[in-house]
Amino acid sequence: MWPMDAIKAISTRRRAKRTARQVARFIRARFDAAVTNSENAKHWANADGLSADAAASANIRRILRNRSRYEVANNSYAKGIVLTLANDCVGTGPRLQLLTEDAEINRTVEAAFSQWCQATGLAGKLRTMRMAKATDGEAFAMLTANPRLYAAVKLDVQLVEADRVSTPLLLKGGTNEVDGIAFDPFGNPVAYTILRQHPGARTLWSPIGSYDRVPAESVIHWYRPDRPGQHRGIPEITPALPLFAQLRRYTLAVLGAAETAADFAAVLFTDAPASGEAAAVEPMDVVELEKRMATVLPDGWKLGQIKAEQPGTTYGEFKREILNEIARCLNLPFNVAAGNSSGYNYASGRLDHQVYFKSIRIEQAHLDAIVCDRIFGAWMAEAMLLNDFAFLRGLGDLPHQWFWDGQEHVDPAKEASAQEKRLKNHTTTLADEYAKQGKDWEVQLRQRAKETQLMEELGLSAAQAAPAAQPQADTEVEDDQRRQAA
Image 1: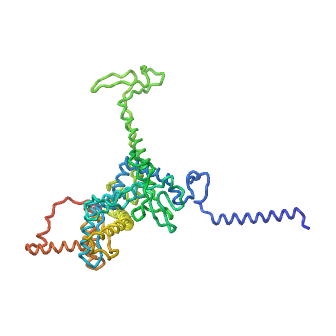
Image 2 (image 1 turned 180 degrees about the horizontal axis):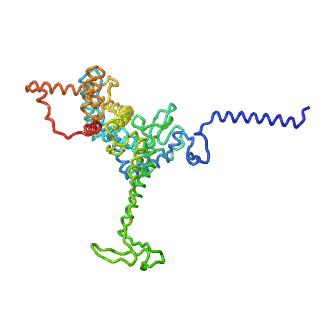
Image 3 (image 1 turned 60 degrees about the horizontal axis):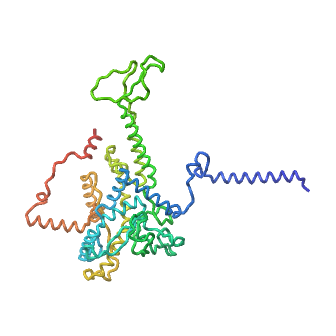
């Protein structure tokens, strides 16, 4: 029989060993970033474990949309950034190139689709969708019929603001619906609930809360899912919203301080002590001054001005750093976001633009797959119903690709030389080189053949037919090269 004291001692030693093993296991699996203490508790207070759809709930997205729209409407930098993204991504609009073996079919369809794009203003609508994607987080468009459209195919693209895609109160609680989007068991959208009236509209042309259930085949939803299982988008400038607010507050504070200092034309001050011999003057008294006057100051007093301390020497640097941080979440280099490349040299400008242009190409590829292909498919389905396009029936999906505006090179002479070398050593093709400029190589070659034939008929050489060179000032590239050489 063991004594009770011995049993307690053995039990205590065993508990101590278990605790030591547990502590050792805890220490081995420990991450500093997972530790919560008094120093970082406030910083991580808002971290949660919500799902993608729960974190981007309807109320949260509404608040972010309203603040993003307000900032873009009132902040010149924010407006310029969003416009730059839309212009660089969409430009003058997409251009279709069919890749079938029948050249006649290719030219006919491309010309008809181009005419339809102009009639519907597709390029402008795509730019609006890109701006909405930045400020609202997502863009919606409905494929509808427009009998008054000045084109053979009466298909039209009607933009829908994100606020209108919402689940009414009568339909809330459905397990297969995420704020206006109904899904099948496989996760595919099957229908969109679109309110007939914007929640913030002041007109009453339709009853409040009325809606339409639109099949998913007629709705285009363009957004960037940042998390698996995310079905609605959040504004792309969300991380920059607090920074935009700080930028505006700092600018207004500096301006207010400078105005306050400038409002005081002059001040009276004395070096005499409070009970000294200076003449008695009422504190904070205001004296109205006249232009070009001569006056006598009270005995013992001097005339001075408030020294303006704002803007400080770090004013410009602070704004540049804030703007650089704002632009980072949108993959913009600083000089594009600021519209100012004064601090850049040639190499730095090219390096920053390479990352930016790559993000633009990715955005355009996403736009091709989500928006342009859907629109072209719907256009083809409508065109096949017309007698003028009867030859398209039975062809199925036509192979095609999209061209966008090319990016101009900073140094065209260097790019032309590099292009010539790539073509000579067969590391590229005419199709690839023209595609970089947003042009169809077949169209360009046919145009070049027409020009060559006409020059032969007129007896002109290539040098004679070339446009006269205009005298130009030295470019920034040449100035930069001279500075580096010096």
